[in-house]
Image (tube, rainbow, N blue to C red; front, side, top):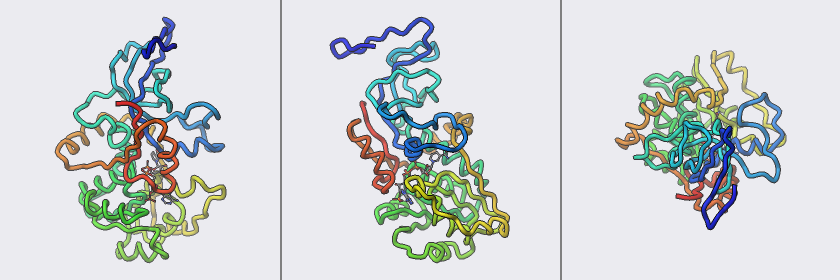
Amino acid sequence: MYLVEGTITLKLPESSNDVLLKNLYLSCDPYMRNRMSKFDGPEIEGFHAYTPASPLAGIGVAKVVESGNPDYKEGDLVWGITKWEEYSLVPSTQIVFKIEHTDVPLSYYTGILGMPGITAYAGFFEIGSPKKGDNVFVSAASGAVGQLVGQFAKLTGCYVVGSAGSKEKVDLLKSKLGFDEAFNYKEESDLDAALKRYFPEGIDIYFDNVGGKTLDAVLLNLKVHARIPSCGMISQYNLTQHEGVTNLLNLIYKRVRIEGFVVTDYYHLYPKFLEFLLPHIREGKIVYVEDIAEGLENGPAALVGLFSGHNVGKQVVIVAR
Ligand code: NDP
């Protein structure tokens, strides 16, 4: 590949299955932090450790510039695994989906209509098994995944409370995202007491985005047969020594189902998910808050900001429009 007067010329070998992508939007996702450490879990596709001195890889929205795979042609819009650079040459197998609906913001395919969206959908509906009237608690509630879980819970007729790390986020949850209640976990010295205040009858579904002390307090406040979709544990990602969770016996006493999940196992639901969600977006029944960083050079700070709660909503990086 070489640059000629500002245009890209690429000669893909006849047998190549690669695609040349012009990156438009990059997604900042917490799991990327885990790829910067030695990962001692089982092999998960797309989850291997980064190679130092190579561009970060992550989810992005891109335009196909040239393709060795007949399923993709120049000008197609796609989302999938790309790299943190302006143009990327990647195997076409890294494209997750071609983008068919462009009447919504393209950046949505990094969030509500992309990986975090399916995470919220699969975690809440498939694992949470919600029913009308359930009491639902969501942590990191204003983030990429959490804000959708709360809105899905409201659509289902649940009572939903979110926790977040600032007054601005708490206000957003109540005023824009339709949560019944929200609180700033950083201002609660006793999380157990806070949960008892919002859930005097207990919690049916805890959508766990943070793990750690919040999970431990939730375990004391579950109803019998509660469900915990274990989505993420961001409070632990920067710790060398993980915090212990001490209240696990409650899982037995309360006959609770806790289930960890990885979103890629649910990508087969994508068509069904789009069919469900697109009308809600178009009718304004589901809204989505994004936090946009302009320019690839601002990407690293945006990514790091996830771990101090700097982002308000889904953190996206615009590389090109
Ligand atoms: P968010 O958009 O919610 O951004 C991360 C947020 O986490 C921050 O804004 C901050 O919000 C909160 N946070 C950061 N550090 C801490 C901490 N120490 N304790 C508590 N909260 C903290 O991210 P996503 O919605 O993209 O991801 C949410 C979770 O879902 C993550 O754990 C992620 O790993 C997981 N995930 C899992 C997937 C799966 O397949 N299982 C797929 C996608 C995401 P605040 O200001 O409120 O503290």
